[in-house]
Length: 297
Image 1 (tube, rainbow, N blue to C red):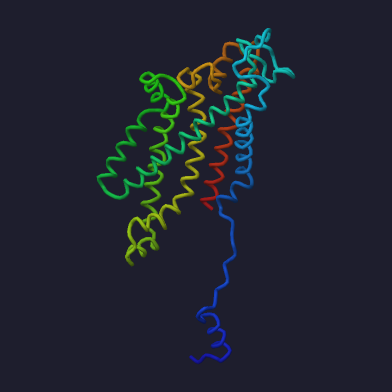
Image 2 (cartoon, rainbow, N blue to C red; image 1 turned 90 degrees about the vertical axis):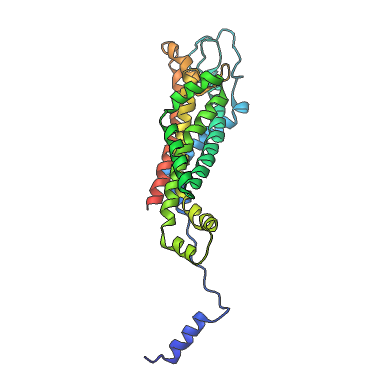
């Protein structure tokens, strides 16, 4: 088949050495797009709003969280005490603000540690059959115990406190991230372009670092958001039953526990911290759902 001079010249321009090909149009990553619209944006705003209030608690709380105010016993909501006061004359609103900060400090440290340890174990389990068996049995043992049962056992050994809450969250999250990473690595390693890289001599570590782990990032982001929501509940539940943050330090769960016997006198005593817990859990769930939808599409 003959080629005209015009076609030959056009082809030469395209494949000419040194000629830079035009850059493809830049597209926003689906993860970022998911967090800037719809339910993802709502989740980000909820979490960011609560976090900002907690971080600024030292400056915006009208009272010290442990200050006992004379004559202010179980007062209802007012201009001076937005959530009222508790049974020992402390301002509930101030305690909720500081409780947010303590809650976020625990989960923002514990969940990433659990994610890192679990991801490393999940990655190592894909490298050798023996390592895989050991890691999977370890995950099974942890998953056999609900988080609260594990919390009660640990509190009985080392006592209640913020450290106990953090350790429980770390241990509970390790199998979640470990199995997520293992599943993604095994799936991605079977893809044609990964097999092609290994055929031409690429090392296993190079393939993992270059192809496998970047493609496993989105499922890990979804799991991270889900784990944050679970960690908020675990910390609040442990403090509610008395094995979490030690009094008199404020915690959202302990504030709710103190409010239960006094609901008739001041219902807002419980409504305030419960609303904050619900906002955090809902915010992280909305973020996780938005990230999951973006990944599927």
